[in-house]
Amino acid sequence: TKKILLFCDPGIDDSLAIMYTMLDPEIELVGIVSSYGNVTKEQATANAAHLVQLAGRNDIPIIPGASQPVQQEDVTFYPEIHGEGIGPIRPPSNMQYQTYPFDTIRLIIERYRDELIIVDTGRSTSLATAFILFPDQLKMVHSFYVMGGAFFVPGNVTALAEANFFGDPTSSNFVLKFAHNLTITPLNATQFAVLTPDIVDSISQNKKNIYAFMIKPVFEYYYEFYKKTVPGIQGAPIHDLLTIMVIKNPAIVDYIYYDANVVEGIEAKGMSYIDYRPASKAGETRIAIQLHYEEFIEEFSRVMLPE
Ligand code: BDR
Ligand code: CA
Image 1 (cartoon, helix red, strand yellow):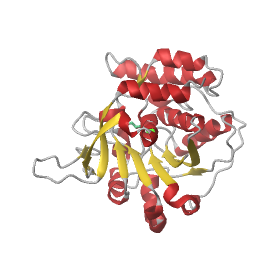
Image 2 (tube, protein in one colour):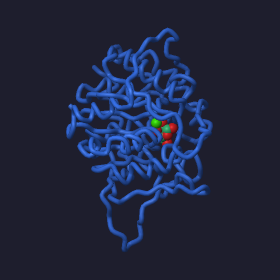
Image 3 (spheres, helix red, strand yellow):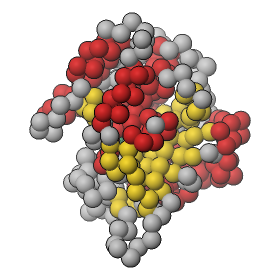
Image 4 (cartoon, helix red, strand yellow):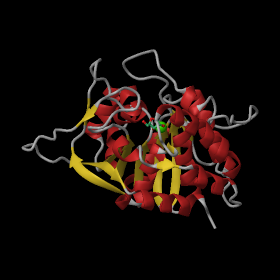
């Protein structure tokens, strides 16, 4: 099994990524670091707790992370895309759950070492902080997977920038510099990882998917936003789930190998780029630039539509 420590900001597509890890017997989620991003840190933490509790996995440590980026105090949240809960679904008001201190990240790495895969599907602040606090431990980790960026394609939060790298570009650059064995899934691939209403209908009728009862309202909330903003789109992109999916299924996307950078200045804030000039050297980071949609749906169905 793949042991994953997930940094995230659930968030609808982060929530789908968590559901996927709960339903795939070949993935073991060993911790969740929940931070600001799509929603506040508090909401992200409650949403994560709700999802693991539905799976009866109260044993998975939930570690609250950053509540804001390093360089600015005012943070924009996105309730119009992700809702105030998980879309319209709110965790029960009397829900009880335990959270763990940030140092738990160090303990988790020391326990699993080179078996551990770190995935970041949120703003980069918490993972950058972990690199600052626990540099020796982070060297032990097997590999890193980051959802972020848009390389030579339009952004989603500004014309140039994708939301995760826009949220805290300083931290993103830090992570891109220090994470080894790094795979990035940018919008180039993830914007095409579209979940469609027919599959959602099937999931909602599936007796073995513990999230069947919530999938439809959650998806519909998310899809409403995309219908309004992306003309002709047939569903809604589940960026963060694709990021987890490529760990076990690397051939679902095609890659280029370059070192990625993020602009920290005002005008092009959060824009990601590589040095793509003919004479430039290829780098070490694996950047997913194209998605194979049919294979994606096949793998999605294998996990989310259990027989
Ligand atoms: C990314 O930004 C977030 O809002 C989504 O959850 C995803 O991680 C897509 O740009
Ligand atoms: Ca996210």
